[in-house]
Image (tube, rainbow, N blue to C red; front, side):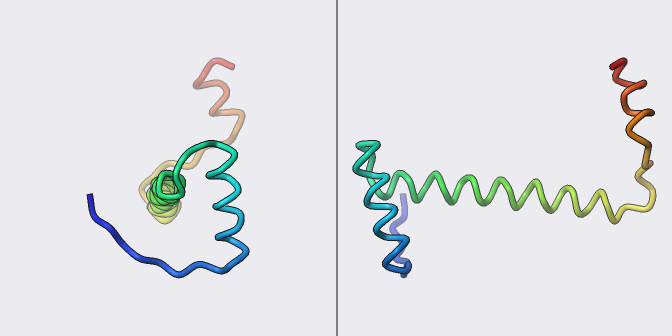
Length: 71
């Protein structure tokens, strides 16, 4: 594992302290989980943007999607 240092606003530190205490987990645990979640969201967002901008990607209506999924 690697150690890094970050600066955060006091309000965010207090919230992190509170969550760590309530969950009996370390602040590092919560920071790591938050970063993992953020990175996953960014990857998903980039995939969505790539598909949105891909002119060869077929666009279908919601009713066509329901038909294809037999809903």
